[in-house]
Length: 361
Image (cartoon, rainbow, N blue to C red; front, top):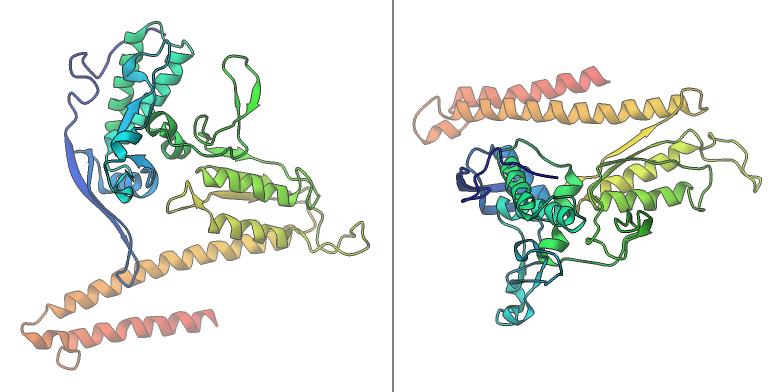
């Protein structure tokens, strides 16, 4: 490919017109205790707080990023595009707890994404020349920084960790197509050929423990959830409740297994951060357990509706209480016995809660 510049200039590269600023991100529990906090994050100046939070809380690599790096010489790869690994000699000059940390800058993330893509493209001769590779790198970083384009979540989570920081781990059961041979091979590394795809549709057989069966599906789903992907399955192959088993017993039905899968998805932190795994389940309308399946879906949706309603009500009533505190002057404004407006706002949520309970009886 012959690349041309559209947003960057050769002299200054990707950040020539991007203004950078430092921002903070924080998650707290209702009681005020801290779940997550990151300060002085370097991000493009025009980013919203939501974008800053998503990057810091979900996509930053939290551990394993070396404080010192060195390039790995590779034939045919220009120095600026070569892989990096921990510089062990320099790291030894630091205290063990200071040698590795996490990403703190959007530019670090943009560099590992765009750099890894460019490295792969150059190594496997996608570019006409080195200049086209440099243009591709600069333009991609600019588009990421200005939010013109964005990859899927597994790319943010995984891509470039090996190329930029030398992060690796044992194989997790992933496969990739070898560009040299065009054949599907099993990866021997967790991050050299990472799992960068977002959504998967997986089948399941009416079998408990064999390959392709129910328990094997949970393993395959866990493998995908771990690296930030989502998965969906049609469970219509599973027999219905009370249908006969080969051993003479009766099947407990697919609902019992669906609940196991739902719990597993809830327990796994997608991408290893704070995000819940994404899981979809569906069932053919002629399955014997379709009514139980629909009822289960309705129950789960009611839980979501209750959470949303509760959040809105809390926001409304707490704001009303705070406003009532400042309708009068002096220290007595915080005393509901002397501040009639505050007393009224204390009573209103109780009446509303009573009405909700009555309506649900």
